Length: 274
Image (cartoon, rainbow, N blue to C red; front, side, top):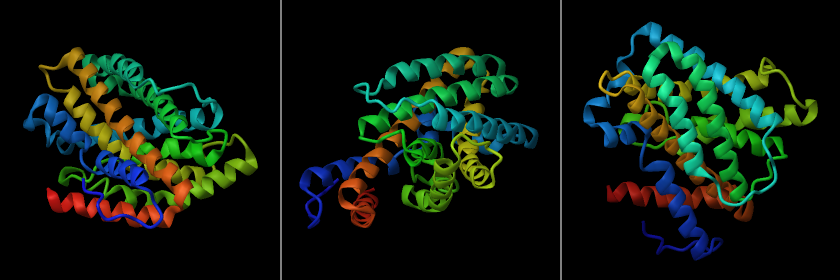
């Protein structure tokens, strides 16, 4: 991606980092990852689940996110521990995904909270590596926010709408929840401001979970395929986390307005080249 047009505020190195973040956040959705692994015939699977399965996914996604939020607020380690262990967390998520591949929808209520919590800890490592202070509720909620993020490819447009659009949609809920948690400490996810955030994230996360479940349900895949799908699921959200926390690091250095302006410019350049 070209970074020849320089900002008066951001250095060449920071613009290069932002360009990388745009590539990570905007260029490849989860369905595209599955398509690359298993073939184009999987693209429509997430839309083909029957209504009872979609309802089960919605319930399981919200439950998994409630567990993840409790972990995000209550037990994430704020101390840096070196480079994020992406492959280790991918392997752990893949192992839990083998359960879903072998037992299908019936295992989702057990498998999804496990894989989501594993992913949250991986996301937290990436956040710390990019300079986040996870002792702050706002930073912990930024980890939770990653579950709503994705690429902007056509097949993702209905749920993602672009990174900046999703962040704008979540901004008030994240801010209100962070303020509430800072004042009240550990609170129930039934608190209205927190429940609203969970609901907003679950609406996007649940669609990605539906795509994952549909791929795991392919008869020829089984447990091995379920593990591969969950590894792709983990890689997808790790990629989103890396881009997200690069953007947040640059916002801390240069302010949100400058980063927003340059992000939009770089994104438009990338779209024009496709």
